[in-house]
Length: 193
Image (cartoon, helix red, strand yellow):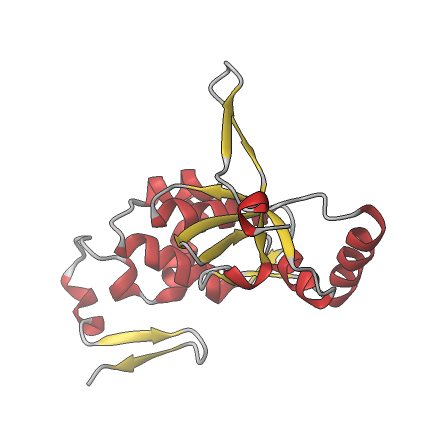
């Protein structure tokens, strides 16, 4: 088939209950790339199960992507299905194209993945810190990622107190950390140069 017969614009249908149904389209596999913020990991047995599922039942769940350019889409959800499609030598995969802000793509990745896999704590902490840097409040982060405020606080603490708590007022006892940052790999505070 020709490209223009397969790759077309995503269609949205409003069902009348304010929920859009986004119809998948086919996109060439080589136009897709993973996002840098996905903390989801799949263990080998589950990855093998995913391969069996796709082999036996077909590619039932489209990837969710954001369009970066005419020739590039970043995967928001479906990275492991993408890996299986590559392994199987598929030329095209079904995708749903979102048109959102970058922080909403980050939120969507976590929402789509939280119930399906485990998340690496350090990567989740980095993502929360990125959302703080984008100006999101703890309440917005908790609401958008399906967390409670304590979970957001714990993830911010892992990332390092100084950066995670930008704009917060603290007592003078916190000045000791003014020129230090937390290294989550060693678990220590390191003096900044």
